[in-house]
Image 1 (cartoon, protein in one colour):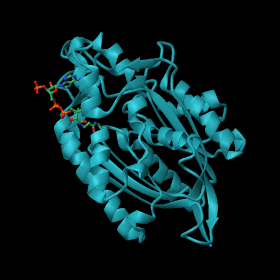
Image 2 (cartoon, helix red, strand yellow):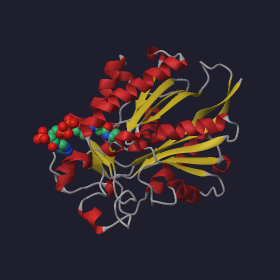
Image 3 (tube, protein in one colour):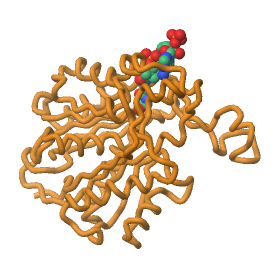
Length: 338
Ligand code: UT7
């Protein structure tokens, strides 16, 4: 028997407001046809003005805790992946912990963008395997809409992202049969910071030749909006996600054909089709949600996980592979029996 961690509860939440590509046509110099053809996105969700990232996370967390069949007071840690925290500091985990009403337990914010949730899952797995923690709440939540350039010039990035949250509870488990029992099998985490400026949010920040971390010049130059070199990101996403997953499966002695479901990050439907094609994965084994949510960064994988459970496509005992890629560049892959 070996001490391990498994996913015991999943929850998600998306804001009610649906923003279609046609809605964006009225704000930006774009078209439904372009967005669907180049990305697969049809619509996304945007919050209203009085909602924060920890508000979305709270709703997803309550559902995950309920589905795990534990009391919130059984949690002994919160790990929160987001690039769009309520405030620069303290971390979004602190705000969520207060709203959830579980004072005293440690909280940790993960700043690894689209890869954040897989980093968070891997860290939770290691805390649990060390024997120090039993029930960790792991969240990915984002509010992109408040940070996008929604002017006619904002189309490069503005059409891609949406708001949402997903949460899981990871709990300690004794694994008797490493092949059959539900548990996290293996995770690989990666980063190459030499690509940091290919997809980033420059301001506000201390990385400017300025005495202030936020000034009018930064705002005038639009440095508070995300900037992306889409083609470089696209090519690297396909390359790095496939490499990571191939290596992970090899190391874990798992064959692709034995994997029941692939829950990839959702940045572009064409990225996921290319991944499936390169790795010989049947398209029906890849669960995509980008059509209805856009790219929700750290929220994407748990949001997809919850939708897959609701649609009966993800069932206990299934072997699942996830891979993600994003700003940093960061990328990761994970294998788990659900
Ligand atoms: O989660 C990780 C983060 N993000 C990603 O992984 C994204 C990876 N990259 C991509 O998904 C794609 O590169 C994009 C969807 C961002 C862009 O698709 P693309 O096929 O690489 O298009 P492009 O950037 O080469 O642009 C093609 C044309 C350009 O016009 P010209 O120069 O050919 O006249 C763009 O200005 O499409 C134009 N364009 C748009 N047109 C209408 C760019 N964005 C838009 C838009 N609506 N929203």
